[in-house]
Image 1: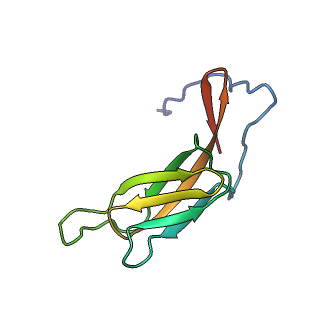
Image 2: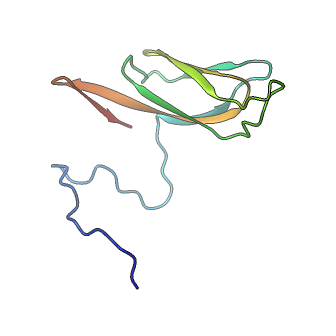
Length: 113
């Protein structure tokens, strides 16, 4: 039996494809890092960050558990428009991030890489 596949026409973006990647891709608004030893925050430089940017972080190191028995978590991210952001985590761990740039139009917030 063939697996179910929804058949519908591709979306019309008006000006063609928004993104068509075959193989590896690199984005200027994505990166990776590690919280420095004895720290629980790091400054990430990215002048494209705005007050409306959506910043996503993924822990790529073992969040494990600390002496308190709790795993590492993202506590909060402080945007610094035109500069970058400060990532505050519960403890040191490796991470990757993506900054989604926002554009306000007619009361809507459009988000894209």
